[in-house]
Image (cartoon, rainbow, N blue to C red; front, side, top):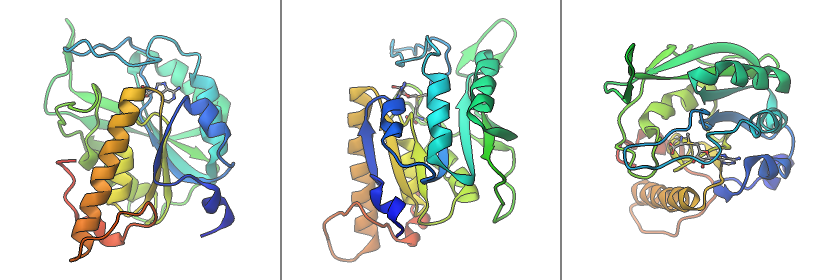
Length: 250
Ligand SMILES: C[S@@+](CC[C@H](N)C(=O)[O-])C[C@H]1O[C@@H](n2cnc3c(N)ncnc32)[C@H](O)[C@@H]1O
C-alpha cells in the first residue's frame, strides 16, 4: 500500500458535506469515482421522501472541483445527473477540468414518472475523464440495465448489481472507489463485493446510518462466505473471490 492510500479512510462511510469532507482527502487519491448526486429536480417519492440539496445547485461546482482534485490523474468518474439540469452539470464538470468521454443509459423495466409526453424508463450518467485514461479491458456497452431495488433504504436507491459492471470496467481489484453522494451506500457495497475499497460520503444523518449499517452487513456476509470459520470483520482488504457473491439482495 502506498502512503497516499495509508492516509485514506478506506472502507468507511463518512458523514458530512462532501465538499468539506473531500477537502480533507489527499489530492490524486481515488482510482475511480462513481457517484449519484441530487438531480436538482425537487424530487419527492410516493412516501413523501425528499433529498437534501435537490433544489439548489450551490454545491455542484465546488463538489465537482473537489472530485477532480481527489481523483487520480488519467482516471474516470461516472456521474449520474438529471436531464432537466444537463447544462448545469456539464458546465460544472468542464469547469472542474473533466472531459466527457461517454454517456450511459441505464434502462429500467418500470416507469418512475409519466408526463403527457413520456414515461420515464431510464436514468443517465456521463463518463468523465481526468487526463487521458487508458482502458484495460473491453469497453462497456453504453446501455446498461437498472434493476429495481424497491427503494427500501433510500428513495433513489440504485441496484448494486447494476453498478458492479461499471466498477469492474473502470477500476481494478484493490482500487479505491469514491462515492461523494453515497445515499444508502449502493456504490460502496458494489465496490466491496467486486474486491475494491470504498469511500462513501453522505450528508443526511439517516441515510448515513442506513449506509453504515448496510456496509457492515455486506462485510459480515463477505467474511462468512470467505471463510469456513467465523472471524471478526476487518475494514481492510476483501478477497477477490467476493466477486462471485450474488449481490441483488444487498
Ligand atoms: C441521488 S441520492 C444517492 C442515492 C444512492 N445512489 C443510493 O443508491 O442510495 C443523493 C444523495 O446525496 C446526498 N447529498 C446531497 N448533498 C450532499 C452533500 N453536499 N454531501 C454529501 N451528500 C450529499 C443526499 O442526502 C442523497 O442521499
